[in-house]
Length: 336
Image (cartoon, rainbow, N blue to C red; front, side, top):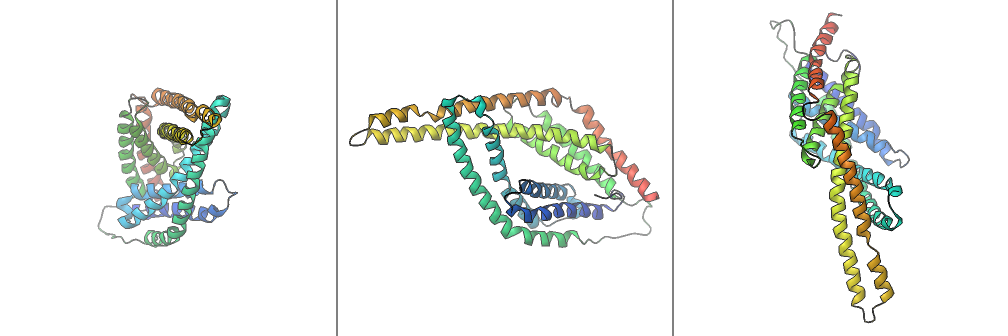
């Protein structure tokens, strides 16, 4: 994002930001059909996420119809299941060296289930993008490219700027994040940790485009990115724990059903029965669950040591102080 943004009127500056994020998504859109482009979906998702975050943060300045926001939310949501499943698959594949040979059958069974789920999720996402993105982009671009305002010649000399609006938004977002972090008490607080991650992401996306004008935001954004990734990994561990619990039940039910089917045959094959009894996928899934629980606890220990119980207070006060830097930067731009 170019310099001079903070001194612009808030309605103009916010729209320029939103349009830049819409451009990111639009540029990544044609790459989705290229199977060799491993970053296309990531770039498309990030563009949509940043756009949604911008529209939410600057809602008072942009005023996008709720219907458009809902369509954008649905479109962005369609990109999540496939990507989330891919993350699970990558982590599970990395556990192979940590599993005994007898436990790998459970891993192979689970990976096959997840691969099938990802295939369906990708197909659903591709259909949603094909049906919706072009129309939604056109409508959003039309809305964001024009605005009306009233200029009073007798008003105070200093007119509102994006810097002023952003400082107020930043203060509220930081307070919200601090409150969410305070609600996390132990490694099992899945929803609280997930909500804190969403708030950290919003602050990061608010500050990231302003690094050109306020260089001191760069290390702050990096720390927010680290927090977001830490909470994201913790969320992945929470989601996988529930996935593994369900998988154990399904695998056990499938094996029991197969044993029953073989036992009720007119001439039960004892060799097949013994083989089926030995094929305990559940033990492999339980081994994976233990590894995932250890990961969850390590991640929480890091979160607790660096961010919880008031440890983030000084850093968050520093972040709030960026509001004054924004105002100073905007004032300098207006004078030049």
